Amino acid sequence: MKQFRFLFWTACAMTATAAAVAQPLPKVRLQSTFPALTLDRPMWMSEAPDHSGRLFLVEQAGRIRIVRKGGDGATASEFLNIVDRHPFVDNEEGLLSMAFHPGFNTNGLFYIYYNQQNKNEHEFFPRRSVISEMKVSATDPNRADLASERVLLEVPQPFGNHKGGQIGFGPDGYLYIALGDGGKGCDPFNNGQNTATMLAKLLRIDVNTRTVLGSGQVQEKLAYGIPADNPFVGEPYMFGLGARHEIYALGLRNPWRFSWDRQTGELWAGDVGQELWEEVDLIVKGGNYGWCVREGAHHFKPGPPGARYIDPVLEYPHQPQLLEESKFPKHSTGLCIIGGYVYRGRKYPSLQGIYLYADYNLGTIWGLRYQDGKVTDYATLLEQPKNIVSFAEDADGELYVLVFDGHVYSITAGGS
Image (cartoon, rainbow, N blue to C red):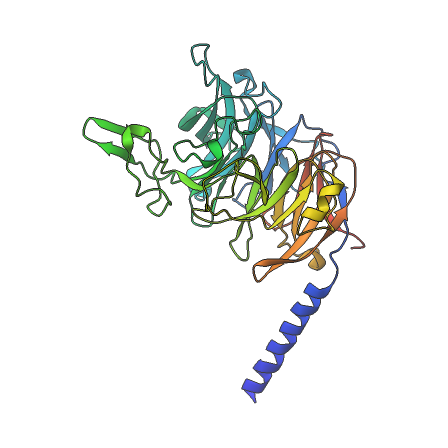
């Protein structure tokens, strides 16, 4: 009898799940979250993992502000300010994201990604991207201790655009770093397929250890460790000219926002296209996503015969006439993808399991369902004119968008 009950309730649960998946994707709305707060080009938002209810908001010019979840934003305070370092010079530079150490509750460590200008003698690399570790002030939990900064990594940059710019700790406890191809256009140095550079890659490092590369008199002492299972760890050091051991995945043009599905652990990313195609990718260790040989699933530059690349989970074109060349002909067009999150919150059951993503230029928000290795449904969830620059997820799994009107909006399911 007990076995019968178990099978009965299991069958009911499976039927309910199937029914939920069969439902059309719901429309969503944007609701102002902190109406009393106006931000200067907001880039990123993270909730502190210490149950304090503090949300940390990153502004492109070099400032991080703290607001209380549930408030109107009127009491926002300044946590960090590096505006005087001038990280924001070109449109795609600046202070672009932050991440809390998994042990933040006890060690107070957090990490930031920002850009800096080099001196004139750096002819080929006038800029650099900086990933730094910092600590919360010992006397004020709402202030960063700038004197505690420890620079982990500096990546030379040839141009002012395509910085990628997100950092985040994965379920494995390692820090992931998204870097674009260095900029300009058409990847002039072919960084996408060059494993000797960290540009156009997703990197993975261990902030808790230190690695020494090379041996004898030819050594490079790193300020971080390299996970033993990174895909290029077995490649020779070659005096620093060989494959970079930090690389986790390659062939990315400008990965703008990645996230892990809280339930499955899958790593999603939006990769901004060149002239014709925008793409959503599922990132796997050692994966090659094709840039600059391909843009989306389409030929872009000549590459080695027989080379294999991972197709996008979904793509959409810049021009309506290209829809017939796509596997997703019902998708609307756009110009600049903003990667988002798989919804795992509790407020809106109709959104459960849907990956939400957007377009910066048009402001459109889309959603897709992914099951058994393929997209089973996709649709437009909202059409609105605001420039969405980033999604955000709080500790409860609820989703937000950061908009260049200076405000943060929560995502609500239509009719809820």
